[in-house]
Length: 220
Image (cartoon, rainbow, N blue to C red):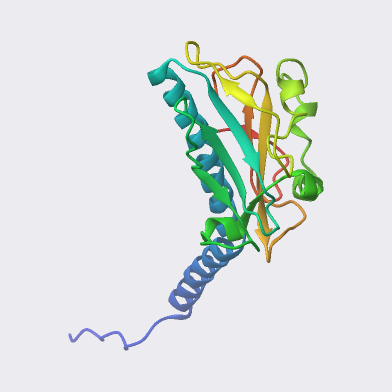
């Protein structure tokens, strides 16, 4: 008896499965080109800031001399926002530099994530959305963390000197750096956000992060 061959083509169920897979991939792609891009940029800029702070500590350690951290400029302005550390030989390194509308080369990450300074302090409220402020949560709502979360390293101008001790590699003051996700140069409600935190007299550089529309923080 001859077997009846199956006709060519896809069944309705097979077509529905293929369409479902295509829909999933399209959703994932849309997330990357919207929310995912800002989230990646926030983490990247945080790592740049952290790298500069570690470099200052390493220079202090190898030379056994105090290293001074200074900031200047604004994120939206002719003078780029930068974090510099003055080495023990008196020269500056200037390893972190961020700008959106200012002059100079523009890194893509800095178009999707911005550093909060005194002129754009409201960005943090917008980016928080429904998430609590980190300084309201235990143990960060007590010292030595609380005072550090009240001292933005980027003041929108020249900051008071913060030293790194050459013998202990401890920071002379506590401070934080906030980074938020941006679209068209502005934060959006519930944008991804990161905090780099250093306590007074501490040696550790802590990083905290919340994703887009997230309501909880996690330590990186």
